[in-house]
Length: 126
Image (cartoon, rainbow, N blue to C red; front, side, top):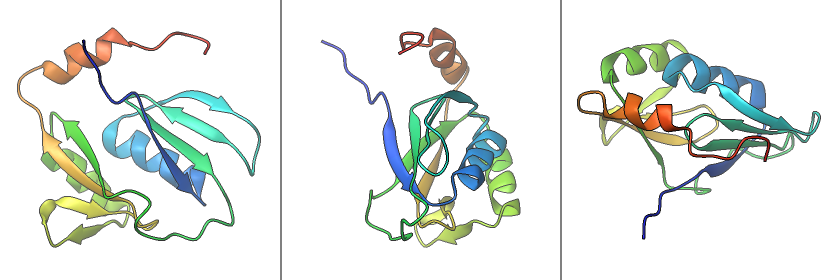
């Protein structure tokens, strides 16, 4: 048996900011969008789903944190800090988005990420 986390859904009030953040910082493009504003659902490459709720209050506790693996931790952090994220006490590779979402930026070894992302395990047109 094999299992993996297919996606994590996050409620956000400013969906455009979050799409821009994940695209620019982690190079995670949109792979699917459903619905119209103010109730869109957007799936990003690599398992993040953003659910738009414009009246959602940015509270911590909706999830502990996202662990996102990258092949260039310093480049990711530079881009993230440029967009106004805050460093968390756990260390330089832990960041907090303005919405309260916590992210642990994890370094990957070799080309393992490129091999995984080339597979695209989801079914098209779901």
